[in-house]
Length: 78
Image (cartoon, rainbow, N blue to C red; front, side, top):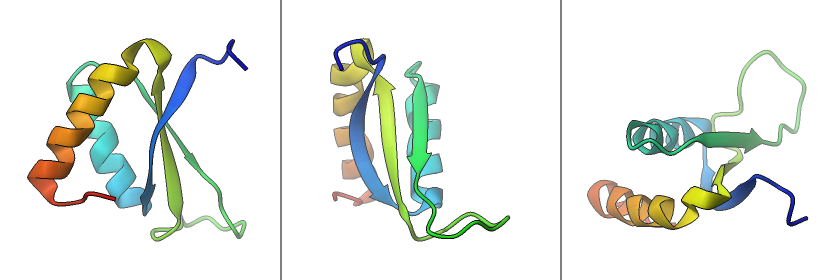
């Protein structure tokens, strides 16, 4: 398991929130991968499902600091 390149930063509710957070982190040079488990197989994204936000292990601490700033600015503390 230590060979994994990414660590879980946070799990958010909804793909829109996940995409906003991803954009914020990427604008600060943090690489992000989103993982969304779908309950159904449709062409449409689940707008209200849980989405896991992963960042590279080497960037987890800077990402946590940026996450705090993001949550403070948006009022989205989970």
